[in-house]
Amino acid sequence: MYTLVKIELYKIFRKWRTSIGFAAIGVLVPVIQIAMYFQGEHYLQFITRNFSDNFVFVGNLLNGYLIAYFILGSLTIHIPFLIALVAGDLLAGEATAGTYRMLITRPVSRIKLVSAKFIAGLIYTNLLVLWLAVISLGVGIMIFGIGELIVFKDAIIIFAQNDILWRFAFAYAFAALSMSVVCSLGFLFSSLVENAIGPIVTTMTVIIIFTIFSAINIDFFRTIKPYLFTNYLSTWHLVFDDPVNYDEIIKNCLVLTGHILGFFGITLFLFKRKDILT
Amino acid sequence: MQKVIEVKNLTKKFKELTAVNNLDLNVYSGDIFGFLGPNGAGKSTTIRMLTTLINPSSGTIKIFDKPLKQKRNEILRKVGAIVEKPDFYGYLSAYKNLEILGQISGCDTSNKRIMEILETVGLEKRAKSKVKTFSHGMKQRLGLGQALLHDPELIILDEPTTGLDPQGMKEIRELIIYLAKEKQKTIFLSSHILAEVELVANRMIIINKGATVVEGMVQDLLNASQLKVSFEIDEIEKAKILLAETQWKKKIESFGDYQILFLLEKEEISPLNKFLVEQGIGVHSIVPKRSLEEYFLHLTEKGA
Image (cartoon, rainbow over all chains, first blue to last red):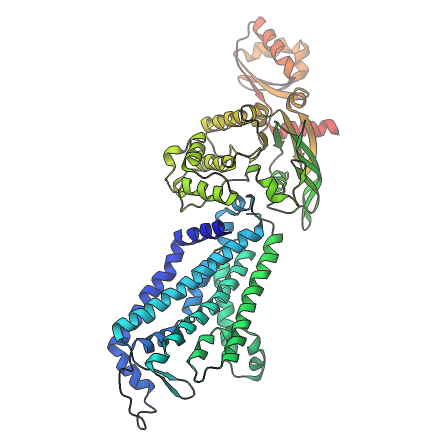
Protein backbone atom coordinates (compact mmCIF):
# COMPACT_ATOMS: atom_id res chain seq x y z
CA MET A 1 0.00 0.00 0.00
CA TYR A 2 2.90 2.33 0.82
CA THR A 3 4.26 1.95 -2.74
CA LEU A 4 0.83 2.61 -4.25
CA VAL A 5 0.34 5.77 -2.19
CA LYS A 6 3.84 6.94 -3.11
CA ILE A 7 3.07 6.42 -6.81
CA GLU A 8 -0.23 8.27 -6.53
CA LEU A 9 1.46 11.19 -4.75
CA TYR A 10 4.13 11.27 -7.44
CA LYS A 11 1.42 11.41 -10.12
CA ILE A 12 -0.50 14.13 -8.26
CA PHE A 13 2.55 16.33 -7.81
CA ARG A 14 3.72 15.90 -11.39
CA LYS A 15 0.45 17.34 -12.67
CA TRP A 16 0.13 21.00 -13.51
CA ARG A 17 -3.24 21.34 -11.79
CA THR A 18 -1.71 20.40 -8.42
CA SER A 19 0.61 23.39 -8.43
CA ILE A 20 -2.39 25.66 -9.15
CA GLY A 21 -3.60 25.11 -5.58
CA PHE A 22 -0.26 25.92 -3.98
CA ALA A 23 0.38 28.81 -6.36
CA ALA A 24 -3.09 30.28 -5.75
CA ILE A 25 -2.55 30.31 -1.99
CA GLY A 26 1.02 31.49 -2.48
CA VAL A 27 -0.26 34.50 -4.44
CA LEU A 28 -3.64 35.21 -2.87
CA VAL A 29 -2.54 35.23 0.78
CA PRO A 30 0.42 37.60 0.30
CA VAL A 31 -1.85 39.92 -1.71
CA ILE A 32 -4.26 40.02 1.23
CA GLN A 33 -1.34 40.55 3.60
CA ILE A 34 0.05 43.43 1.52
CA ALA A 35 -3.41 45.01 1.35
CA MET A 36 -3.73 44.65 5.09
CA TYR A 37 -0.27 46.12 5.58
CA PHE A 38 -1.34 49.35 3.90
CA GLN A 39 -5.06 49.42 4.73
CA GLY A 40 -5.22 47.28 7.86
CA GLU A 41 -5.69 50.17 10.27
CA HIS A 42 -8.80 51.28 8.37
CA TYR A 43 -10.11 47.74 8.51
CA LEU A 44 -9.46 47.57 12.24
CA GLN A 45 -11.18 50.94 12.82
CA PHE A 46 -14.12 49.71 10.77
CA ILE A 47 -14.65 46.52 12.77
CA THR A 48 -14.18 48.28 16.13
CA ARG A 49 -16.31 51.34 15.25
CA ASN A 50 -19.21 50.26 17.46
CA PHE A 51 -16.97 49.86 20.47
CA SER A 52 -14.57 52.78 20.06
CA ASP A 53 -16.75 55.11 22.15
CA ASN A 54 -16.63 52.80 25.17
CA PHE A 55 -13.26 51.06 24.79
CA VAL A 56 -9.72 52.14 24.22
CA PHE A 57 -7.78 49.57 22.19
CA VAL A 58 -4.05 49.62 22.87
CA GLY A 59 -1.13 47.53 21.62
CA ASN A 60 -0.46 45.84 18.27
CA LEU A 61 -3.93 44.60 17.37
CA LEU A 62 -3.15 44.44 13.66
CA ASN A 63 -0.78 41.53 14.09
CA GLY A 64 0.00 38.23 12.35
CA TYR A 65 -2.61 36.38 14.37
CA LEU A 66 -5.45 38.68 13.34
CA ILE A 67 -4.39 38.50 9.70
CA ALA A 68 -4.22 34.69 9.81
CA TYR A 69 -7.63 34.54 11.50
CA PHE A 70 -9.08 36.85 8.86
CA ILE A 71 -7.57 34.81 6.00
CA LEU A 72 -8.73 31.50 7.45
CA GLY A 73 -12.28 32.83 7.54
CA SER A 74 -12.24 34.28 4.07
CA LEU A 75 -10.80 31.25 2.27
CA THR A 76 -13.38 28.62 3.17
CA ILE A 77 -14.91 28.85 -0.30
CA HIS A 78 -11.66 29.14 -2.25
CA ILE A 79 -9.83 26.23 -0.63
CA PRO A 80 -12.61 23.69 -1.42
CA PHE A 81 -12.32 24.65 -5.07
CA LEU A 82 -8.56 24.01 -5.05
CA ILE A 83 -9.17 20.67 -3.39
CA ALA A 84 -11.97 19.67 -5.76
CA LEU A 85 -9.63 20.48 -8.64
CA VAL A 86 -7.37 17.59 -7.65
CA ALA A 87 -9.84 15.24 -5.91
CA GLY A 88 -12.23 15.36 -8.87
CA ASP A 89 -9.41 14.29 -11.15
CA LEU A 90 -8.10 11.38 -9.09
CA LEU A 91 -10.28 8.69 -10.67
CA ALA A 92 -11.98 10.51 -13.56
CA GLY A 93 -8.56 11.69 -14.79
CA GLU A 94 -7.51 8.05 -15.26
CA ALA A 95 -10.70 7.45 -17.24
CA THR A 96 -10.13 10.51 -19.44
CA ALA A 97 -6.52 9.54 -20.11
CA GLY A 98 -7.46 5.90 -20.74
CA THR A 99 -4.95 4.77 -18.11
CA TYR A 100 -7.60 2.86 -16.13
CA ARG A 101 -6.95 -0.02 -18.53
CA MET A 102 -3.28 -0.17 -17.56
CA LEU A 103 -3.96 0.24 -13.85
CA ILE A 104 -6.81 -2.18 -13.37
CA THR A 105 -5.21 -5.00 -15.32
CA ARG A 106 -2.39 -5.05 -12.73
CA PRO A 107 -2.38 -7.70 -9.99
CA VAL A 108 -3.63 -5.29 -7.35
CA SER A 109 -7.19 -5.22 -6.06
CA ARG A 110 -9.43 -2.31 -6.95
CA ILE A 111 -9.93 -1.65 -3.24
CA LYS A 112 -6.19 -1.12 -2.79
CA LEU A 113 -5.91 1.08 -5.86
CA VAL A 114 -8.85 3.26 -4.83
CA SER A 115 -7.66 3.42 -1.22
CA ALA A 116 -4.18 4.51 -2.31
CA LYS A 117 -5.65 7.24 -4.46
CA PHE A 118 -7.89 8.38 -1.63
CA ILE A 119 -5.04 8.49 0.88
CA ALA A 120 -2.93 10.44 -1.63
CA GLY A 121 -5.86 12.88 -2.07
CA LEU A 122 -6.10 13.35 1.69
CA ILE A 123 -2.35 13.95 1.93
CA TYR A 124 -2.60 16.60 -0.80
CA THR A 125 -5.54 18.22 1.05
CA ASN A 126 -3.65 18.33 4.34
CA LEU A 127 -0.51 19.67 2.68
CA LEU A 128 -2.56 22.43 1.09
CA VAL A 129 -3.98 23.45 4.48
CA LEU A 130 -0.48 23.25 5.97
CA TRP A 131 0.76 25.51 3.18
CA LEU A 132 -2.06 27.93 3.99
CA ALA A 133 -0.98 27.87 7.65
CA VAL A 134 2.66 28.50 6.81
CA ILE A 135 1.88 31.36 4.44
CA SER A 136 -0.90 33.05 6.39
CA LEU A 137 0.35 32.56 9.94
CA GLY A 138 4.10 32.22 9.43
CA VAL A 139 4.51 35.02 6.91
CA GLY A 140 1.82 37.06 8.71
CA ILE A 141 3.82 36.97 11.94
CA MET A 142 7.00 37.92 10.06
CA ILE A 143 5.33 40.95 8.48
CA PHE A 144 2.98 42.10 11.22
CA GLY A 145 4.59 40.69 14.35
CA ILE A 146 2.63 39.20 17.23
CA GLY A 147 0.19 40.55 19.76
CA GLU A 148 -3.15 39.78 21.28
CA LEU A 149 -5.87 38.39 19.07
CA ILE A 150 -9.14 40.26 18.99
CA VAL A 151 -12.11 38.20 17.81
CA PHE A 152 -15.58 39.55 17.21
CA LYS A 153 -18.36 37.05 17.74
CA ASP A 154 -21.42 37.66 19.88
CA ALA A 155 -19.03 39.57 22.09
CA ILE A 156 -15.49 40.85 21.83
CA ILE A 157 -12.98 38.21 22.86
CA ILE A 158 -9.38 39.16 23.33
CA PHE A 159 -6.90 36.30 23.60
CA ALA A 160 -3.58 36.79 25.33
CA GLN A 161 -0.46 36.14 23.28
CA ASN A 162 0.35 32.92 25.11
CA ASP A 163 -3.20 31.62 24.54
CA ILE A 164 -3.28 31.82 20.75
CA LEU A 165 -0.91 29.42 19.02
CA TRP A 166 -2.54 26.24 20.28
CA ARG A 167 -5.88 27.59 19.05
CA PHE A 168 -4.43 28.10 15.59
CA ALA A 169 -2.93 24.63 15.65
CA PHE A 170 -6.36 23.15 16.34
CA ALA A 171 -8.07 25.54 13.92
CA TYR A 172 -5.84 24.37 11.06
CA ALA A 173 -6.34 20.75 12.11
CA PHE A 174 -10.12 21.21 12.01
CA ALA A 175 -9.84 23.08 8.71
CA ALA A 176 -7.88 20.10 7.34
CA LEU A 177 -10.60 17.72 8.57
CA SER A 178 -13.29 19.88 6.95
CA MET A 179 -11.38 20.04 3.68
CA SER A 180 -10.92 16.24 3.81
CA VAL A 181 -14.72 15.99 3.59
CA VAL A 182 -14.58 18.11 0.44
CA CYS A 183 -11.82 15.83 -0.88
CA SER A 184 -13.85 12.68 -0.22
CA LEU A 185 -16.94 14.20 -1.85
CA GLY A 186 -14.93 15.18 -4.95
CA PHE A 187 -13.41 11.69 -4.96
CA LEU A 188 -16.86 10.09 -4.84
CA PHE A 189 -18.06 12.15 -7.81
CA SER A 190 -14.80 11.35 -9.58
CA SER A 191 -15.58 7.63 -9.42
CA LEU A 192 -18.90 8.11 -11.19
CA VAL A 193 -17.83 9.75 -14.43
CA GLU A 194 -15.17 9.69 -17.12
CA ASN A 195 -14.29 13.39 -17.17
CA ALA A 196 -12.76 15.40 -14.33
CA ILE A 197 -14.68 18.61 -15.05
CA GLY A 198 -17.97 17.09 -13.88
CA PRO A 199 -16.79 16.12 -10.37
CA ILE A 200 -15.09 19.50 -9.83
CA VAL A 201 -18.20 21.46 -10.82
CA THR A 202 -20.56 19.12 -8.96
CA THR A 203 -18.53 19.24 -5.74
CA MET A 204 -18.50 23.03 -5.77
CA THR A 205 -22.20 23.17 -6.67
CA VAL A 206 -23.09 20.93 -3.72
CA ILE A 207 -20.98 23.02 -1.33
CA ILE A 208 -22.40 26.32 -2.56
CA ILE A 209 -26.03 25.10 -2.49
CA PHE A 210 -25.67 23.56 0.97
CA THR A 211 -23.95 26.71 2.24
CA ILE A 212 -26.80 28.85 0.91
CA PHE A 213 -29.36 26.53 2.53
CA SER A 214 -27.47 26.80 5.83
CA ALA A 215 -27.54 30.58 5.66
CA ILE A 216 -31.25 31.01 4.92
CA ASN A 217 -33.11 31.80 8.11
CA ILE A 218 -36.37 30.02 7.40
CA ASP A 219 -37.83 27.20 9.51
CA PHE A 220 -37.51 24.60 6.78
CA PHE A 221 -33.81 25.31 6.23
CA ARG A 222 -33.19 25.54 9.96
CA THR A 223 -34.65 22.01 10.25
CA ILE A 224 -32.40 20.51 7.60
CA LYS A 225 -29.31 22.51 8.58
CA PRO A 226 -27.95 19.89 11.03
CA TYR A 227 -27.99 17.34 8.20
CA LEU A 228 -25.91 19.41 5.80
CA PHE A 229 -22.21 18.67 6.10
CA THR A 230 -21.35 22.23 5.09
CA ASN A 231 -22.77 23.28 8.44
CA TYR A 232 -19.75 21.64 10.10
CA LEU A 233 -17.02 22.92 7.79
CA SER A 234 -16.43 25.96 10.01
CA THR A 235 -15.72 23.92 13.13
CA TRP A 236 -12.35 25.65 13.38
CA HIS A 237 -14.24 28.77 14.54
CA LEU A 238 -15.16 27.01 17.77
CA VAL A 239 -11.60 26.99 19.11
CA PHE A 240 -11.76 30.79 19.18
CA ASP A 241 -14.64 30.71 21.68
CA ASP A 242 -14.07 31.37 25.33
CA PRO A 243 -14.65 28.99 26.96
CA VAL A 244 -14.18 26.39 24.23
CA ASN A 245 -17.17 24.11 23.80
CA TYR A 246 -15.34 20.79 23.52
CA ASP A 247 -18.53 18.74 23.33
CA GLU A 248 -19.61 20.69 20.26
CA ILE A 249 -16.17 20.30 18.67
CA ILE A 250 -16.10 16.53 19.30
CA LYS A 251 -19.61 16.16 17.87
CA ASN A 252 -18.68 18.16 14.77
CA CYS A 253 -15.49 16.18 14.27
CA LEU A 254 -17.44 12.93 14.47
CA VAL A 255 -19.93 14.21 11.90
CA LEU A 256 -17.11 15.27 9.55
CA THR A 257 -15.24 11.98 10.01
CA GLY A 258 -18.49 10.10 9.42
CA HIS A 259 -18.94 11.96 6.14
CA ILE A 260 -15.39 11.16 5.05
CA LEU A 261 -15.85 7.47 5.80
CA GLY A 262 -19.33 7.46 4.27
CA PHE A 263 -18.27 9.11 1.01
CA PHE A 264 -15.23 6.83 0.77
CA GLY A 265 -17.31 3.73 1.53
CA ILE A 266 -19.77 4.59 -1.25
CA THR A 267 -16.85 5.18 -3.63
CA LEU A 268 -15.38 1.76 -2.83
CA PHE A 269 -18.75 0.06 -3.20
CA LEU A 270 -19.42 1.67 -6.58
CA PHE A 271 -15.92 1.36 -7.99
CA LYS A 272 -15.59 -2.32 -7.13
CA ARG A 273 -18.59 -3.02 -9.36
CA LYS A 274 -17.82 -0.47 -12.03
CA ASP A 275 -17.33 -1.63 -15.61
CA ILE A 276 -14.30 0.11 -17.09
CA LEU A 277 -15.43 1.05 -20.58
CA THR A 278 -13.04 3.90 -21.36
CA MET B 1 -1.90 -29.87 -23.53
CA GLN B 2 -2.63 -27.56 -20.60
CA LYS B 3 -5.52 -25.15 -20.95
CA VAL B 4 -4.43 -21.58 -20.28
CA ILE B 5 -7.79 -19.91 -20.87
CA GLU B 6 -11.10 -21.69 -20.51
CA VAL B 7 -14.24 -19.66 -21.13
CA LYS B 8 -17.68 -21.20 -20.73
CA ASN B 9 -21.06 -19.66 -21.57
CA LEU B 10 -19.65 -16.18 -21.17
CA THR B 11 -22.28 -13.49 -21.54
CA LYS B 12 -22.17 -9.74 -21.12
CA LYS B 13 -25.27 -7.61 -21.37
CA PHE B 14 -25.37 -3.82 -21.35
CA LYS B 15 -29.05 -3.14 -20.64
CA GLU B 16 -30.76 -4.29 -23.86
CA LEU B 17 -27.57 -5.00 -25.78
CA THR B 18 -25.98 -8.44 -25.56
CA ALA B 19 -22.33 -7.77 -26.41
CA VAL B 20 -21.12 -11.32 -25.73
CA ASN B 21 -23.52 -14.21 -25.96
CA ASN B 22 -22.75 -17.62 -24.44
CA LEU B 23 -19.19 -17.60 -25.72
CA ASP B 24 -17.02 -20.69 -25.25
CA LEU B 25 -13.32 -20.74 -26.03
CA ASN B 26 -10.20 -22.61 -25.04
CA VAL B 27 -6.61 -21.45 -25.37
CA TYR B 28 -3.81 -23.95 -24.81
CA SER B 29 -0.29 -23.47 -23.55
CA GLY B 30 2.05 -22.30 -26.33
CA ASP B 31 -0.81 -21.22 -28.62
CA ILE B 32 -0.81 -18.10 -30.67
CA PHE B 33 -4.56 -17.84 -30.57
CA GLY B 34 -6.25 -15.59 -33.09
CA PHE B 35 -9.40 -13.96 -31.79
CA LEU B 36 -11.17 -12.65 -34.85
CA GLY B 37 -14.33 -10.81 -35.58
CA PRO B 38 -15.59 -7.73 -37.37
CA ASN B 39 -15.84 -4.44 -35.51
CA GLY B 40 -18.51 -4.64 -32.84
CA ALA B 41 -18.38 -8.44 -32.69
CA GLY B 42 -17.63 -8.46 -28.95
CA LYS B 43 -13.85 -8.96 -29.05
CA SER B 44 -12.93 -6.04 -26.83
CA THR B 45 -15.76 -6.79 -24.40
CA THR B 46 -14.44 -10.35 -24.09
CA ILE B 47 -10.90 -9.10 -23.54
CA ARG B 48 -12.13 -6.63 -20.93
CA MET B 49 -13.76 -9.53 -19.10
CA LEU B 50 -10.55 -11.61 -19.38
CA THR B 51 -8.61 -8.73 -17.82
CA THR B 52 -11.25 -7.94 -15.14
CA LEU B 53 -12.03 -4.49 -16.49
CA ILE B 54 -15.68 -5.44 -16.73
CA ASN B 55 -17.73 -8.05 -14.92
CA PRO B 56 -19.46 -10.83 -16.88
CA SER B 57 -23.26 -10.98 -16.66
CA SER B 58 -22.95 -14.77 -16.55
CA GLY B 59 -20.59 -17.60 -17.42
CA THR B 60 -17.16 -18.57 -16.14
CA ILE B 61 -13.58 -17.67 -16.97
CA LYS B 62 -10.71 -19.87 -15.85
CA ILE B 63 -7.13 -18.83 -16.49
CA PHE B 64 -4.30 -21.23 -15.61
CA ASP B 65 -7.08 -23.52 -14.40
CA LYS B 66 -8.13 -21.05 -11.69
CA PRO B 67 -11.37 -19.06 -11.52
CA LEU B 68 -10.61 -15.46 -12.50
CA LYS B 69 -13.15 -13.95 -10.16
CA GLN B 70 -11.75 -15.60 -7.05
CA LYS B 71 -8.03 -15.68 -7.94
CA ARG B 72 -7.78 -12.39 -9.80
CA ASN B 73 -4.47 -11.09 -8.45
CA GLU B 74 -2.75 -14.46 -8.55
CA ILE B 75 -3.75 -14.85 -12.21
CA LEU B 76 -3.00 -11.29 -13.33
CA ARG B 77 0.56 -11.66 -12.00
CA LYS B 78 1.08 -14.04 -14.92
CA VAL B 79 -0.85 -12.05 -17.54
CA GLY B 80 0.29 -9.10 -19.63
CA ALA B 81 -2.23 -7.21 -21.72
CA ILE B 82 -2.86 -4.42 -24.15
CA VAL B 83 -6.54 -3.56 -24.10
CA GLU B 84 -7.56 -1.46 -27.10
CA LYS B 85 -5.19 1.44 -27.65
CA PRO B 86 -2.46 1.75 -25.06
CA ASP B 87 -2.70 4.99 -23.09
CA PHE B 88 -0.09 6.21 -20.66
CA TYR B 89 0.60 9.15 -18.36
CA GLY B 90 1.54 11.64 -21.05
CA TYR B 91 3.27 13.98 -18.60
CA LEU B 92 5.71 11.21 -17.60
CA SER B 93 8.53 9.62 -19.57
CA ALA B 94 8.33 6.18 -21.15
CA TYR B 95 10.82 4.97 -18.52
CA LYS B 96 8.80 6.38 -15.63
CA ASN B 97 5.56 4.94 -16.99
CA LEU B 98 7.09 1.47 -17.09
CA GLU B 99 8.64 1.93 -13.67
CA ILE B 100 5.30 2.93 -12.14
CA LEU B 101 3.38 0.09 -13.80
CA GLY B 102 6.10 -2.35 -12.76
CA GLN B 103 6.02 -1.16 -9.16
CA ILE B 104 2.24 -1.59 -9.06
CA SER B 105 2.68 -5.13 -10.40
CA GLY B 106 5.39 -5.78 -7.82
CA CYS B 107 7.91 -6.90 -10.44
CA ASP B 108 11.57 -6.10 -11.13
CA THR B 109 11.83 -2.38 -11.94
CA SER B 110 15.60 -2.12 -11.99
CA ASN B 111 17.16 0.15 -14.60
CA LYS B 112 18.50 -2.96 -16.37
CA ARG B 113 15.06 -4.56 -16.67
CA ILE B 114 13.28 -1.43 -17.86
CA MET B 115 15.96 -0.65 -20.44
CA GLU B 116 15.86 -4.28 -21.58
CA ILE B 117 12.11 -3.96 -22.21
CA LEU B 118 12.52 -0.61 -23.97
CA GLU B 119 15.18 -2.17 -26.21
CA THR B 120 12.88 -5.11 -26.98
CA VAL B 121 10.24 -2.72 -28.30
CA GLY B 122 12.75 -0.38 -29.93
CA LEU B 123 12.23 2.63 -27.67
CA GLU B 124 15.50 2.70 -25.74
CA LYS B 125 16.53 6.01 -27.32
CA ARG B 126 13.26 7.64 -26.23
CA ALA B 127 13.35 6.31 -22.66
CA LYS B 128 13.43 9.78 -21.13
CA SER B 129 10.97 11.41 -23.55
CA LYS B 130 7.51 12.28 -22.28
CA VAL B 131 4.90 9.93 -23.68
CA LYS B 132 2.76 12.85 -24.86
CA THR B 133 5.41 13.42 -27.55
CA PHE B 134 5.04 9.83 -28.86
CA SER B 135 3.32 8.83 -32.08
CA HIS B 136 0.54 6.25 -31.99
CA GLY B 137 2.95 3.58 -33.20
CA MET B 138 5.41 4.37 -30.42
CA LYS B 139 2.62 4.14 -27.86
CA GLN B 140 1.69 0.75 -29.30
CA ARG B 141 5.29 -0.39 -28.80
CA LEU B 142 5.34 0.96 -25.26
CA GLY B 143 2.01 -0.81 -24.69
CA LEU B 144 3.64 -4.04 -25.71
CA GLY B 145 6.55 -3.20 -23.40
CA GLN B 146 4.30 -2.77 -20.36
CA ALA B 147 2.59 -6.05 -21.21
CA LEU B 148 5.97 -7.83 -21.18
CA LEU B 149 7.43 -6.03 -18.17
CA HIS B 150 6.58 -8.62 -15.54
CA ASP B 151 7.54 -11.54 -17.80
CA PRO B 152 3.99 -12.94 -18.04
CA GLU B 153 3.13 -16.44 -19.22
CA LEU B 154 0.01 -15.29 -21.06
CA ILE B 155 -0.01 -12.17 -23.23
CA ILE B 156 -3.34 -10.72 -24.34
CA LEU B 157 -3.02 -8.35 -27.28
CA ASP B 158 -6.00 -6.37 -28.53
CA GLU B 159 -5.31 -5.26 -32.11
CA PRO B 160 -1.60 -4.61 -31.42
CA THR B 161 -0.73 -3.50 -34.96
CA THR B 162 -3.41 -0.83 -35.24
CA GLY B 163 -1.85 2.43 -36.41
CA LEU B 164 1.54 0.93 -37.21
CA ASP B 165 3.31 1.32 -40.54
CA PRO B 166 4.05 -1.86 -42.54
CA GLN B 167 7.54 -2.15 -41.05
CA GLY B 168 6.13 -1.72 -37.54
CA MET B 169 3.44 -4.33 -38.21
CA LYS B 170 6.10 -6.76 -39.42
CA GLU B 171 8.22 -6.17 -36.33
CA ILE B 172 5.28 -6.76 -34.00
CA ARG B 173 4.42 -9.97 -35.85
CA GLU B 174 8.00 -11.15 -35.54
CA LEU B 175 8.03 -10.27 -31.86
CA ILE B 176 4.82 -12.25 -31.29
CA ILE B 177 6.30 -15.30 -33.02
CA TYR B 178 9.57 -14.88 -31.07
CA LEU B 179 7.69 -14.68 -27.75
CA ALA B 180 5.70 -17.82 -28.52
CA LYS B 181 8.49 -19.92 -30.02
CA GLU B 182 11.55 -18.79 -28.06
CA LYS B 183 10.06 -17.67 -24.76
CA GLN B 184 7.20 -20.20 -24.63
CA LYS B 185 4.57 -17.53 -24.03
CA THR B 186 0.92 -18.11 -24.82
CA ILE B 187 -0.47 -15.33 -26.98
CA PHE B 188 -4.11 -14.30 -27.24
CA LEU B 189 -4.25 -12.06 -30.30
CA SER B 190 -7.37 -10.12 -31.13
CA SER B 191 -7.73 -8.71 -34.61
CA HIS B 192 -10.23 -7.90 -37.31
CA ILE B 193 -7.64 -8.58 -40.01
CA LEU B 194 -7.65 -12.21 -41.05
CA ALA B 195 -4.31 -11.95 -42.88
CA GLU B 196 -2.61 -10.76 -39.71
CA VAL B 197 -3.87 -13.77 -37.76
CA GLU B 198 -3.12 -16.12 -40.63
CA LEU B 199 0.53 -15.05 -40.57
CA VAL B 200 1.15 -15.75 -36.88
CA ALA B 201 -1.60 -17.83 -35.25
CA ASN B 202 -1.87 -21.59 -35.02
CA ARG B 203 -5.43 -21.64 -33.69
CA MET B 204 -8.27 -19.19 -34.03
CA ILE B 205 -11.85 -18.41 -33.30
CA ILE B 206 -14.14 -16.12 -35.26
CA ILE B 207 -16.94 -14.45 -33.38
CA ASN B 208 -19.81 -12.29 -34.52
CA LYS B 209 -22.53 -10.61 -32.50
CA GLY B 210 -20.85 -11.97 -29.40
CA ALA B 211 -21.15 -15.62 -30.40
CA THR B 212 -18.78 -18.18 -31.94
CA VAL B 213 -18.94 -18.58 -35.71
CA VAL B 214 -16.08 -21.04 -36.08
CA GLU B 215 -13.12 -22.27 -34.02
CA GLY B 216 -10.18 -24.49 -34.90
CA MET B 217 -6.68 -24.74 -36.36
CA VAL B 218 -5.88 -21.83 -38.66
CA GLN B 219 -4.65 -23.98 -41.53
CA ASP B 220 -7.65 -26.28 -41.41
CA LEU B 221 -10.10 -23.40 -41.39
CA LEU B 222 -8.45 -21.37 -44.10
CA ASN B 223 -7.79 -24.30 -46.39
CA ALA B 224 -11.44 -25.16 -46.20
CA SER B 225 -12.40 -21.82 -47.62
CA GLN B 226 -12.43 -20.27 -51.05
CA LEU B 227 -10.38 -17.24 -51.97
CA LYS B 228 -11.09 -14.34 -54.22
CA VAL B 229 -8.00 -14.21 -56.42
CA SER B 230 -7.17 -11.39 -58.80
CA PHE B 231 -5.02 -12.38 -61.85
CA GLU B 232 -3.39 -9.40 -63.58
CA ILE B 233 -2.76 -10.44 -67.20
CA ASP B 234 -1.69 -8.81 -70.47
CA GLU B 235 -4.30 -10.08 -72.99
CA ILE B 236 -7.69 -9.83 -71.38
CA GLU B 237 -9.81 -10.42 -74.54
CA LYS B 238 -7.83 -13.51 -75.54
CA ALA B 239 -8.13 -14.83 -71.99
CA LYS B 240 -11.90 -14.32 -72.03
CA ILE B 241 -12.25 -16.47 -75.13
CA LEU B 242 -9.93 -19.17 -73.87
CA LEU B 243 -11.47 -19.40 -70.45
CA ALA B 244 -15.00 -19.52 -71.86
CA GLU B 245 -14.26 -22.96 -73.25
CA THR B 246 -12.84 -24.42 -70.02
CA GLN B 247 -13.85 -25.52 -66.52
CA TRP B 248 -12.46 -22.18 -65.24
CA LYS B 249 -15.41 -20.28 -66.69
CA LYS B 250 -17.65 -20.99 -63.73
CA LYS B 251 -14.93 -19.78 -61.36
CA ILE B 252 -14.90 -16.27 -62.81
CA GLU B 253 -16.33 -13.57 -60.55
CA SER B 254 -15.73 -10.50 -62.72
CA PHE B 255 -13.55 -8.91 -65.41
CA GLY B 256 -11.58 -5.69 -65.12
CA ASP B 257 -9.51 -3.83 -67.71
CA TYR B 258 -6.40 -5.78 -66.80
CA GLN B 259 -7.57 -8.26 -64.18
CA ILE B 260 -9.86 -11.22 -63.86
CA LEU B 261 -11.26 -12.02 -60.44
CA PHE B 262 -11.74 -15.72 -59.71
CA LEU B 263 -13.33 -17.52 -56.80
CA LEU B 264 -10.94 -20.41 -56.16
CA GLU B 265 -9.89 -23.06 -53.74
CA LYS B 266 -6.31 -22.48 -52.59
CA GLU B 267 -4.99 -25.49 -54.55
CA GLU B 268 -6.59 -24.27 -57.80
CA ILE B 269 -4.42 -21.14 -58.02
CA SER B 270 -1.34 -22.89 -59.34
CA PRO B 271 -3.12 -24.96 -62.10
CA LEU B 272 -4.97 -21.86 -63.33
CA ASN B 273 -1.72 -19.91 -63.49
CA LYS B 274 -0.12 -22.79 -65.40
CA PHE B 275 -3.03 -22.92 -67.84
CA LEU B 276 -2.88 -19.20 -68.62
CA VAL B 277 0.89 -19.25 -69.14
CA GLU B 278 0.70 -22.33 -71.38
CA GLN B 279 -1.86 -20.49 -73.53
CA GLY B 280 0.65 -17.67 -74.01
CA ILE B 281 -1.00 -15.18 -71.68
CA GLY B 282 1.42 -13.23 -69.52
CA VAL B 283 0.51 -13.27 -65.82
CA HIS B 284 1.91 -10.20 -64.05
CA SER B 285 0.52 -10.76 -60.57
CA ILE B 286 -1.72 -13.03 -58.52
CA VAL B 287 -3.32 -11.36 -55.54
CA PRO B 288 -5.48 -13.37 -53.13
CA LYS B 289 -8.22 -11.26 -51.53
CA ARG B 290 -9.70 -12.82 -48.46
CA SER B 291 -11.03 -10.24 -46.11
CA LEU B 292 -12.46 -11.28 -42.79
CA GLU B 293 -15.83 -10.02 -43.90
CA GLU B 294 -15.77 -12.19 -47.03
CA TYR B 295 -14.54 -15.18 -45.08
CA PHE B 296 -17.14 -14.59 -42.46
CA LEU B 297 -19.89 -14.27 -45.08
CA HIS B 298 -18.60 -17.40 -46.70
CA LEU B 299 -18.83 -19.27 -43.41
CA THR B 300 -22.32 -18.08 -42.62
CA GLU B 301 -23.52 -18.85 -46.15
CA LYS B 302 -22.09 -22.32 -45.78
CA GLY B 303 -23.84 -22.67 -42.46
CA ALA B 304 -27.14 -21.60 -43.99
